[in-house]
Length: 262
Ligand SMILES: NC(=O)NCCC[C@H](N)C(=O)O
Image (cartoon, rainbow, N blue to C red; front, side, top):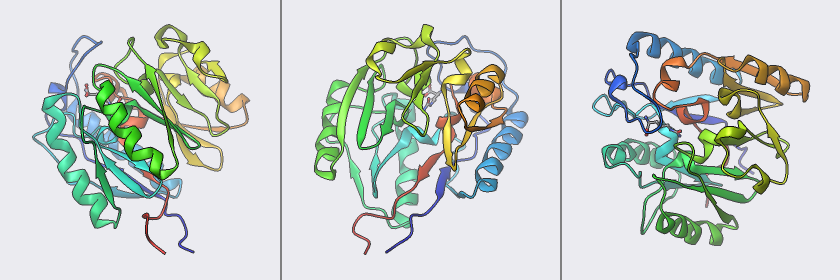
C-alpha cells in the first residue's frame, strides 16, 4: 500500500507580478522583492508542517504564475490540467502539466469551456465549482465528465462578488465552510457556514493535524479559528493579496498516490 505523499506544488513569483490581472481591486504598487520574501516564508511554512514543496518551473514571463492553484485540480490521484479563463494565463498550465507528469500522475484535460483551479473547492468527494468570469458552464460540465467516473460529484456554485469561489469561501477540516459574508453570494447554500470577521479570514490551507495556514491580515479570524480547536499558522501575503491572491492560490497539495499505482 503506497503511503499518501505530502507534496505541495509551488511556483516562484514572476518579477512582473505587479502586472498581474485585476478584476475587483484597483492596482496599487507591489514590492517584488518583498513578494519573494513572503513567498519564501509561505513555502517554509509548508515544509515546516511536513509538506515537500515541488517547484513548478518558473514562468517569469507570466505575471500571475505564482498563483499555481489555478493551473491544476487534483482529483484523488489524477491531475486535471485546467483551461484558465483568462487568455493571458493559459501558458501557465504547461509547466504544471510537465511537473505532475514527472511525479507520475495521470492527467486529464477539459474538453470544453474554461476553468480556474481557484474555483474548485473539494469537501470529501464533492467538488464545488464556482461559476465565475473565469469558469464557464461548459468548463463545469467538462470537469463533471472527468470527476463522476472517478467517484466525485460536481456541484456548481454561482459566484459573482469575487474573482474565484475560493476567494469567497474555503472549508475547515471538519467540513465547515468559512467566508466573509459581504462577499459570499449565498451563505445559505452551505449546510455548515461560519461567517468570518475579515475578508482575509475566509481562506485556509489544511496542513494536517488541525494546522491551518492563513493570511496574517486576518488576526480576529485566526482567534476564531483557534477557538474552534484548530491551530492557525499566519503568513504575511500582502503583496499577493494586492493581486487578488490568497493563501490557497499559492500552492496545490498533492495528497494521494497517482491513480493506477499499486
Ligand atoms: N486561485 C486564485 O484565487 N488565484 C488568484 C489569481 C489572481 C490573478 N491576479 C488573476 O486575476 O488571475
